[in-house]
Image 1: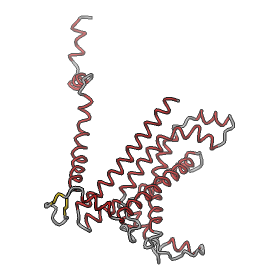
Image 2: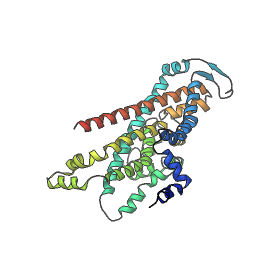
Image 3: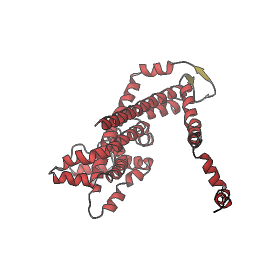
Image 4: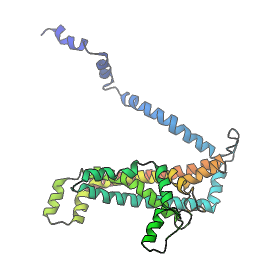
Length: 317
């Protein structure tokens, strides 16, 4: 074969192929592909957050947003000095913790059930996703009607069961409003956990399960030895996601109670909305938002610290 014949394939390559060849091995190629994402984050995430941070150090009214007065840390100091704000922090922490624990626990239980072979398993897997697919506003409206003191079906069921708690005003009672909100929230979000964990269960080694069964291990021991090590990273990621989603959940709580009665269901995002669009104090609302963002960042840092620590422990074992 002549030299001209050997050079022919290179000369006939398309412009795309020649461009790809130039990108291969170029040290700037990773930065080139990451640049659009970085620009998007800086423009649509970084800049609004920077504006919110700057706004939190000012006294700004919603009626005159173009006029701001720099007040330094005064908004944060006033928040820290208000007992009702610490109550908001407590309600947010309680709401988030219960959502994380129950949503993941129920999701794990449902995933374990759906992972077992039975007739109609495909239909059951499809039905369990319906609550997650429903719009939160629609779910909140339906549950508010079901919890109605006079016409709600919950009180009707309690009356049929001859329980003393019949005709309870669930969403108007400071003692019952938060449990009602939690029940509605967990009903909607636990299917997401079940679907994600069901996907993780597909990666559990059947050989390890069968070996544990041959050794006479019971179901709990099989779960500890074969199942939990496989799904543990997925559970940790779910804890992070559900925590952040619970911290920022607004629509469902606002539709059902608007943070009431007397602040029993007021979380950080409800407090932010109230200060911004009811009290019309944008500076204080921005300070509340930065507090919520700081809590989310702390949770994220703890997650990555715990994940890296677990990986190092597994590497040493």
